[in-house]
Length: 463
Image (tube, rainbow, N blue to C red):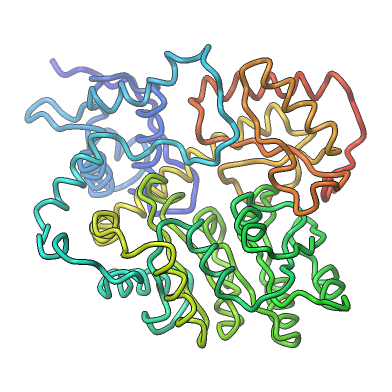
């Protein structure tokens, strides 16, 4: 007698094709422990009937689960949850009383040990020892640069010579190279922004010019005001897609305005596009002003943060400087990471993993809205973090109070271009903790926010 499946069939929310949404829903529930280790998955025909999808759609989803090491097929019996993957996904449940870290913006751990072992096995079959007995070019292997260029053309509409693309050791490395290669002088930057960009800019001795923001990110008015200074900035660092930490999403019209302002003022742009995987298809600044825009991305949010593979698309006339700084910061591109990237992108693993990450991010954002809704900044899309605008002193108090309850939050100063600014907020990272841990942490944060009901004075309050 065949076992019945404990899973309640569903599809992950759009976007995505039906087989991608089914894969994402199954992967999320396996990793969250909703489907226990060894449990039988629904029969192909039964699942197709219950979800009104084709048999081929179910087959593709199950094949993807097997390839990722989340399930295994047993001839004559059906499809079952992989024991190792389920144990790995449930590990957070055994640590409910441990310190909960909401300070690091990691994606949920979709890339499991079985998936990684299988991926590395396929990479090992293609290893050429010659690449390990010589130095790689600092900019990356030409075939890897061409592969990334094709992916950027497909997904971001960017058409360019691959010689302008540099494979970097993560997005942080790419940001540093861009800041070092861009014209000298003050740097215009979002008033709250990615801490790694702030650290790199300060290390390079850049004066920071904070730019005011609203629910779409940097405002054109604040950029014009900065450019009207006696010593105007010659470079601006911006995150138009799912801004970190606020979650702001710059719409197409605003992006065109920013590009027009930059072109008129001969301002160099550094576009951090790392979170575009969570945003709808909007034109990149590098598409609107390619002659003056550095474009930064990585695989950390769409495949695995430990891979440390990023990229930098440099505008014409800056490639020599980029090569100089690449050679100064590393002697060669990492051949192992390059091979993993080549295999993962070549077989579409990154797209499958990204779909699962987006599905989990949506579920975690729903949890955050259910518990913190009144305090959250408006956010057009779901990603890996939410933002609570607060006076700086109040945000600092909550960080300290959270630490006493074993909940670790990044201090507001980490994000502030002006450390003395009276207004900032709290970034709540949703991907690093297990779902049970996250639910507990959100309840504690809501309790701390309720203890004093100060007026919301932070960045772009809800309208």
